[in-house]
Image (cartoon, rainbow, N blue to C red; front, top):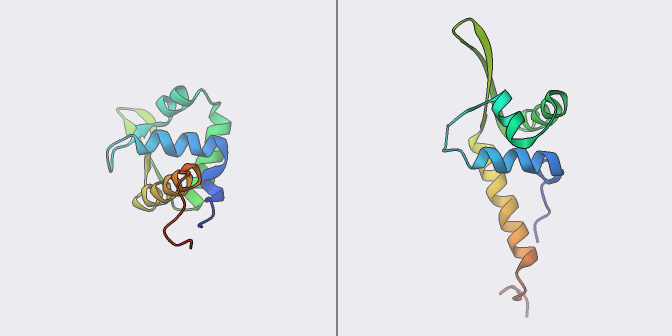
Length: 103
């Protein structure tokens, strides 16, 4: 059986990745909106986003909306695949039926 991805498995990062996976492929969310959805402090969210970014699971872009700086976050293709694999492992752990590989 495959191990759970430790980058995603931390509770706060799991919440971040699950939220981002609900967006369409390539869609972005503003940092303050993500912070509000997750009820996390800016500092806490930043730390977890940095860890996910270092793993290549999220992409963060800085831009401007008018004169106001804006930070946008999206789940990368690699992050989406990692989350899909993570959920498959969780489902396998929860499925009471034996694997076909077992005698």
